[in-house]
Image (cartoon, rainbow, N blue to C red; front, side):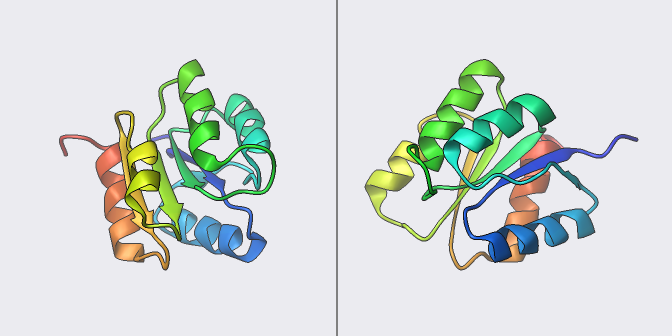
Length: 124
């Protein structure tokens, strides 16, 4: 059985590495992580992930929500947004399309694992 691929988009290197280790311990494969919206678009094109873990606030010209919109306009892929921002405007922007979840920082890892599993294995 082929492992599901996860693209991690996080501009804090330590947080990205921690998510990579965690996701791989759950049995998923990780693509090379990205730290900006522009890089996320490139990596998504190259890796063709099954799901994306996307920080909302990123370095670069575009935020995670804008990057996810560009990626999903090319190929529908579920996204779990991870953010320190919990305001309603940000949540509304992030939740403006299907197959989206939103997790606030600090991340509850049990919740993250459950949401990953639910989006990658619907109906199971």
